[in-house]
Image (tube, rainbow, N blue to C red):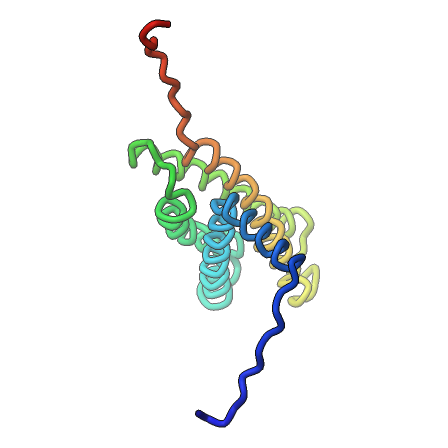
Length: 180
């Protein structure tokens, strides 16, 4: 023994157990949404690392291009994660067809994700020399990674769920039963 006492946690009340059970059932029932959210979180980190790496060190005068490149790389990773994990119970389509639909949805998603940043920078002129560098960077972050990602995420989940990885339609047995 190390001499440390372990504190026993108090037993859960029936109400707490009920809340935990309900929450667990909810997560299980909507596991594709939860997995899609985790996949999106991984994609968000990839996007941000590439976006700011390019924006700060490689192409500082092209923030929309830097964001789009980050989104494209993250999209490639998210295809694999969505196919193998988020929607693993689906995917009845031929892989080439599925990938084509994924690319189409993703291209639209890149446009949706980039549009708020484009509007912020070039429509509202929230860029230096019109505003301070700090204001520019805060506006870039709010418009691209936050607003753009939120809009694109909603669109992508709907489109992936509807077109790319749809649930298989159950086939009804229409064979006549003997004696009917």
